[in-house]
Image (cartoon, rainbow, N blue to C red; front, side, top):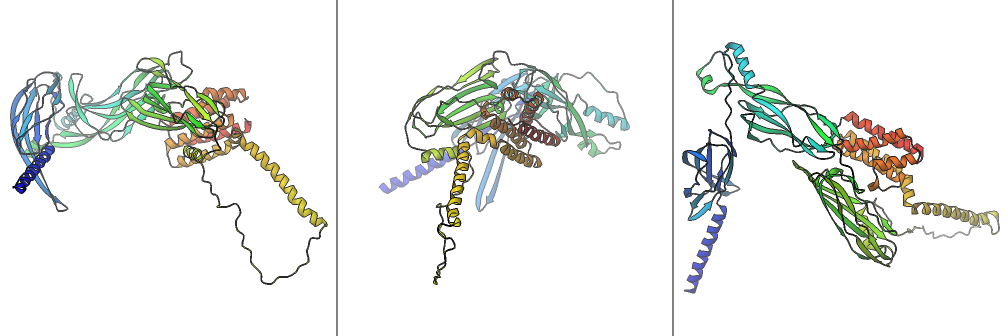
Length: 615
């Protein structure tokens, strides 16, 4: 009896599990066009992947019911690697028609399958007004002129055209706007949306393209007529200066499938029709963007950020020992000109050995702008014990929503530094992971074993150097003089290496030439973005090392002031700032190959000119 009860429970449990698996696999969905036109029928479809009954559709209060539901079903079976797979679909189709404009919601429907009730998704349908009647009429024509006139009519600018659409025509400097080229067509079949495309240079803007996986079409009511529309190209534009900036027209080439009439017609022509492909050049009109200067009263910590941002920070530890590494990390999040955000600087207390900040960008481009996170990590090593305060890091930006400057700030961090030993292994690991260092190969010991061949026969030789002779004293004097010279050389080298700024100063040209060599290789590979980034880094790193200024503190104004104080000619200063601006601009704007070569030559010449000035 107990065994029978156990078997019964097992069967019931297996049945419940199978029913649950069946319920999890059931898909009941509703589908219909998201946009329809008043007075034109459309189909509403309900599909379920199981045999079902008792469909309960919602009330079609906002639509006229024309027919349905028409029921159809399909099934298929396949064998893959010996495994049998079956599919089944049951479909209910209604024919409806919208009778008024607006946006309406169709509630979910219900259906019963295997004793269980399932609910579909709801639908949101936008109803567009009907086309306004066209009062124009064309006179009847015959022959070739009739065919030409028909083709011209189908491909006229009223039936197919492109609009240039911008989200804003009045913006501030560095404020993003979205530019779209949108195709409109009606009464014509577009076989291929674009073939040859010619876009303007967008002079005066930084450009950030928005990738499109494929082109989707949708209905839109425009100027009294319903069109199929497709967005062909979208890009974000960031104006770089104030004033009226004109965007030149763009051209697109589309391939149209046009119906023609043959002079000798047959019954098949009347039934199927005759078509031909026609190439149509379409011009998207230009537009003008009115750019305003950023308002006065910029905070001292403002460095060009425009958008909407937040900032958070953290410190690795507040109680450490001398010669141990401490890191401060800040994250700037938001939407705006993220790729142009400058790195804020930390005013480390005296006695801290600081390294250049490490920046990690995680951005994505959407129609609302470039958004993401700019993570900055600062590392320093305290060399003296005591209590120190890391001042707050401030960052100011212009808020495009509130139209005012806002300042973000991190808290102050108080560090208690106790006396410790020399650099710990952990500190060395942290520093090595933080900065990129060249591989250093060391031997296992300073002195290698020197193998000496043993001789079995010993020969007594007369010494060649006699005690008290000139050769005898030279054997002592020469090594002594060599040791003194080496000590002086090493002492000078050690003293120079202790001054990190002087080391960077002496190696500035060598580092810059190495970067220029890398840039030249990138230029031959036509890797434009990496080329312009390397050119900009070559110029900035050279100036940072030569002028003994951290890279994070460099700006065109700072560079100009210091070079002017050092007696550099104004035209050379202007060339330096122009090269930096051109490289920064070209990283996000299109450029031709000869412009890459020109910028490379100009950068090399300017570095050589500054080298001759002996800053």
